[in-house]
Image (cartoon, rainbow, N blue to C red; front, side, top):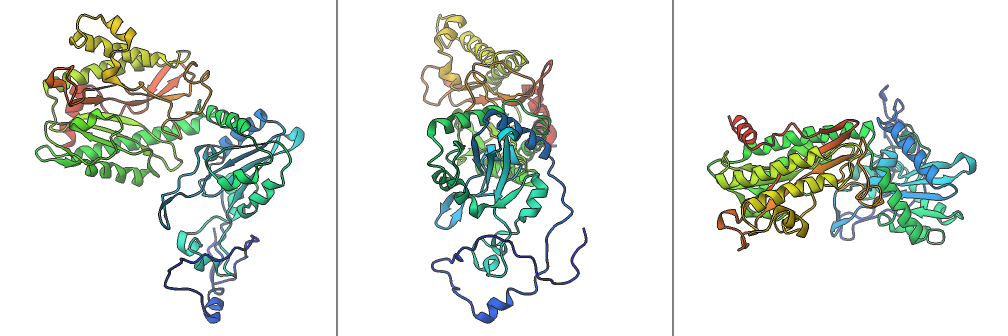
Length: 490
């Protein structure tokens, strides 16, 4: 691409004008005519002309075609969502709605994908985005979300090249939608303004069906998604290695240092962590979603680290390892760990095409019931009876896994018949993550068990002839974990 050789007057976006937004108690307010005139001049044209479509453009086109075919004659609206306030005038880092990203590949805030009914042609897809900041009215430097404050945006022309869709200025979307007469479906809870614009043509029941369908579309991953999940798992493995290298063997390591160490890897190789990292040491490991991370990992403790890197395309890994901080398991820690490992092995072995989705859960939980019964924790009851009554769940608590993809708990709103009560298909990706959690105050178990929490979790791809462990780079067997720790620590 040829770089501009000198300042020129950029072409102004043909977007609606909006009042300049000032901070209420900001130190600067208003400008002189001389400064305003000065700031309209001398800016080089930065329009990018030699752009190629994004890597997943062909996939997003195919996904939109499948969506169009499912809802002929209806207006379909999928917003990316709006920023959420963290405090006063600061927002949380923006993360777009997963369905919007799945259908477009774009990650812009306040954006909207609209599929307009087009008769026998199905639908005409349009992407509503915010255009470049204007220089002629001062928006680019006076507005607190102008480009000199928030960074350069793609022009609508650039976005059309990148995403393979016609693009319109998002500041017209509400008026356009309010004029719609066709029955509409909108993905709710992401953009209240869009929902309000469709109140005459969208109804809750249709929108609920729409959400279910969008979630179900993602059950089987295509090759682009599987490649992203491989990247996520590989980066996650390196993040776990980073943690081991900062984990003290003779001094306590703050859980927040563990969390932060993994976060550095996530930001270095991806967009973010895919969910709040669990860095649970000692008895904190018996709290399944311990995300406060306010404790210390001390020698002799187990560290349960549940963390995943989210790629730049927003696909996340979800991996758990339980590590002896000192480098070696105690006898009781190894006993519990090996039982969880056996349960995970049974669960993974049950994953394959044609298997019921629940099979891996039952296989893993049955294995845990066998171990708990053998340890005498249920008196004279048999393992069969313990499992029938669900008594093992006092110590296992959770399900054994879930779908994984662009959400950590992917496809959560899909049809139960296709998901929980369905069969596994090649291209599905799920976690297998059994665990045992013995609470500090549980008087029904011998004291040596109390305060021990163990979970082992991997990301499993269903293949045509079985399965593949995408996170297999991290060791799982207890002796292999110990050898891995010793190797990384030199």
